[in-house]
Image 1 (tube, rainbow, N blue to C red):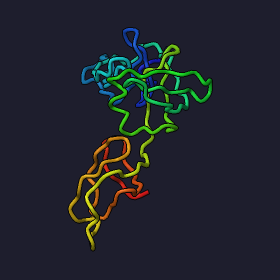
Image 2: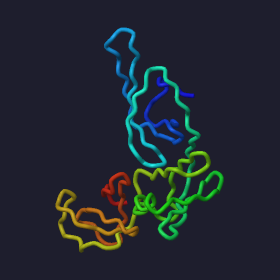
Image 3: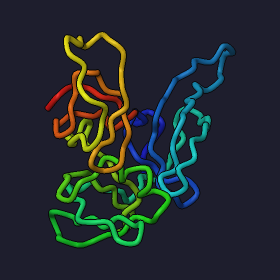
Image 4: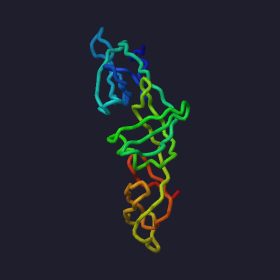
Length: 187
């Protein structure tokens, strides 16, 4: 059991039978005498993906979720689903089509990820902050182009389209931010 004083960003609690990742916590002091401190939380339900708000009273207790993070690896895509392997137990997990579609532009076979397991089944996948991908198609490089000049569209090996600097050519490796799909630098 956790109390509201244990709440901080990144911990996983169990609400209504589902694991919920705390995104933000604020403590609000009471203005009246004898009133309890209020603990306002914003959390993401890891099964449905919903982001919700909930207010607790100071001292309230909640269950800690049976949630574990394991090193994992993306193995392959199968009929629109992603297949991942836990690198500690070598157990394989599938991610359904909807969730995999959001992650697939950043995944190559062998990419290491962090698997979030709730009661023995995979509920989340944390991608690395950046990935290195190869440019498969882009307009020809412009001579004397600088990094601050206009951008052009580049298609990467996973099918992801990004805005890239004009000096990039087909075949270059680039670093891409997995949070927003933005070009960072050449690799």
